[in-house]
Length: 294
Ligand SMILES: Nc1ncnc2c1ncn2[C@@H]1O[C@H](COP(=O)(O)OP(=O)(O)OP(=O)(O)O)[C@@H](O)[C@H]1O
Image (tube, rainbow, N blue to C red; front, side):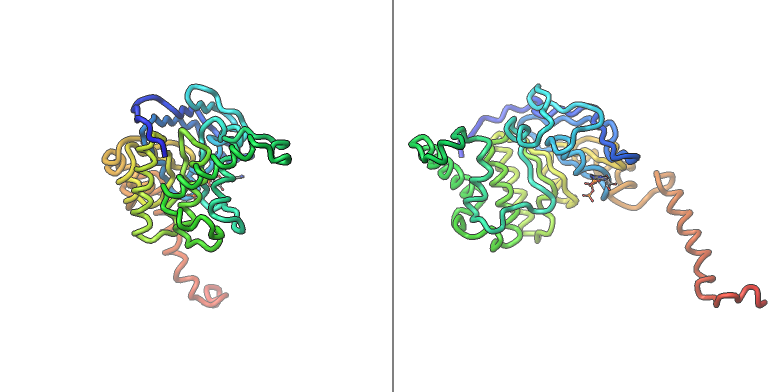
């Protein structure tokens, strides 16, 4: 892989006031988020907080109901393949590989936004097409080397162990030569060794000059990895800061990381539910009609 100098500070992603509504449900509400070059930013929050919906707004899968997303200063087009061509690549929470294609072919698919040879060149197998194909294969092999899968280039994707399938998804995303990589739960289902290896891989990606935005529920992974972490709760950004700031924020502890504290949002509701359950307990054991029999 070609190495690039990391220039910290240039804003690559600038999302402002992003809101996404599905009918009456506001999944994401007025979220601002920036990612600078050379940065790894984490996006965390409880299930259903709106993290994936926000990713979908960044990558053209959804057109936000309100707000604007810019990549390197340009407003992003509302089509996912155009967003990829602009320089944002992503992986998905549920692995989306071509199971019956080889590992190498999966990475080659990821290069389609970077190859100029058109339909007729492919049909006619022109010299230009062969040159482009050779260059693509070389680049795809470099990427497989980078993620540690070169030795499995000819294996079928479906035969890879789970952790390697996730690595392959990352290689495929990198094949579009992004300036920003979005990772949606990259360590889901991984054992601790695989998680550690993924951490190293993400650092290596950052060291190549690619900014990274990552959603993850594994807090050890997030707080080790990220320069900055934003916390979404019920579609809104609750807190943003470095790992220590976020870990120490009482609202984050209450809403996501740990035990609810007094006056925490939702504590009243929890108390009500617990009281209702306590009241309901004796009557569940009672036989129907028992009260009126007394
Ligand atoms: N296409 C959709 N249509 C309607 N509602 C949706 C749609 N996509 C997501 N939602 C709702 O939006 C809310 C946010 O969901 P989202 O998947 O973005 O949360 P999340 O933070 O990524 O959760 P998780 O950590 O479980 O992946 C949820 O209430 C979800 O049911």
